Every structure is written in C-alpha cells, then in structure tokens.
Length: 249
Image (cartoon, rainbow, N blue to C red; front, side, top):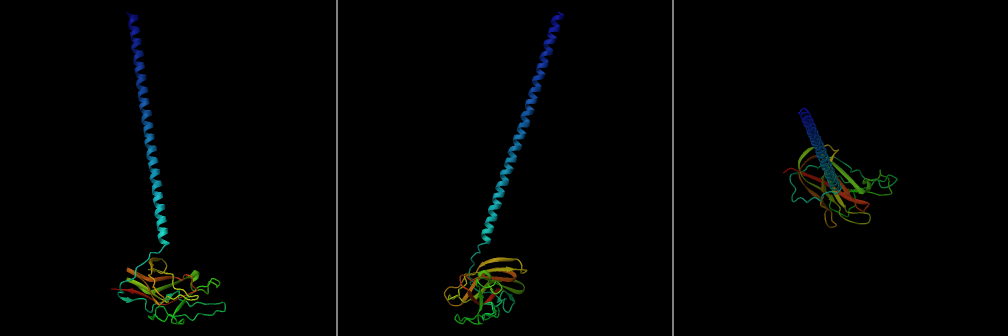
C-alpha cells in the first residue's frame, strides 16, 4: 500500500510538472507573438510615414516647379475700359531714362523726351527730342547702352504710397524701320520700397504702325514705385515719350 501511494505521488508530481511546463511554453509563445505583432505594426507605421513624407515632398517639388514656371512667364494683362482718377505719374521723378551714348567718342543721342511731363508726341516720323530712345548695340560697352540686353527699365517714384492704382500706360512709337523696332513686350511691376517688386503682367500692345498706348488695367493696387521693363525685340532703337499711372475713382 505504501509503495502504491509513493508511486501515485510520483505520478501526480510528474503530471503537475508537465502541466506547469506547458503553461510556461504557452505564455512564452504568446509573449513572443505579441512582440512580433508590435514590431510588425511599428514597421507598417514607419512605412506609411515614409510614404507620406515622399508624397508631401513630391507635392512640394511640383508646387515649386509651378511657381517657378509662373514667375518666368508674365501673365497677359487686359486693356482698361476706362481711365479713372488722375495721372499720378505726372511730373514725377524716374530712373532709367538716361539718354543713350551711341559711340566710343561719347556722342549722346538726341532722343531725350521727358517721360512724365504730360506730353505724348504723336509724330511717328520725327526722330528727335519729342521722343525718348532706348538703344542697344551688342558691340557697344554696357555703360553706353541704356537698354542692357535689349531691355529698357524705367522706374517711376510716385512720391508717396498711392492707393487705388487702376491703369498703367506707356506711349510708344510703334513703327518698324531700319534699326528701329516696336516694343516686343512691356512688363509692369509695382513696389512699396523700390527694392522688392510685384509683377502685374504684360501691357496690351498697340496695333498698326502709328504711335499709340500700350496699357494694362490694374485692380486697385497700392504702391509708390512703378516699374516698366520694355523688351525692344530685334531692333537697336525703340522709341517712347510718355508714361502714365492712373489712380483714384
């Protein structure tokens, strides 16, 4: 009887030991599965974050390309349907209107019209001081050209911050002749400080060969400085004689 009891006790002890071992294995397996699941979730989250970052970076790059493309291609403006207010550029100071020096001997061109005196001469055949000339000659020094690389830049100082600017105009001699060309395009920009300019767009150019206004409608802009960049195209000479800026109602 004692032997039977001892054997039974041994069997029970062995059974308990086996059961405990199974429980530990099950717990360890569950813990391992939990760790693996957590690692997998973190990997998936990391992958999603990387993909999201790539998408954002791609979107930012595309947006940057769009901005660069738009900034390098001026928007075509519209012609004003009416001129409201007054010409606030009248008798104002400007830079970029220096008369061209046409040769190495210092000969000054006779085309020196004031661009803000209110006089827009209409004689397209009178190549004299009733017109101001932009001149560009590849063989001449940069100092003698008043339109470097074929682009003349005029900046008008309105004297103070001016509200409700609604139109900008430049009076051009639109003829094409030997060495003389009509402006190919005119870009208008404005600034509050004369340093940083905001581009408004391209002026609508006149048609035909007679002197006429290139102009652009502006939507109530506030500025002190108005810049016009006049692309001469293929000509060595390009003529203008008045710039107007209208503001008010």
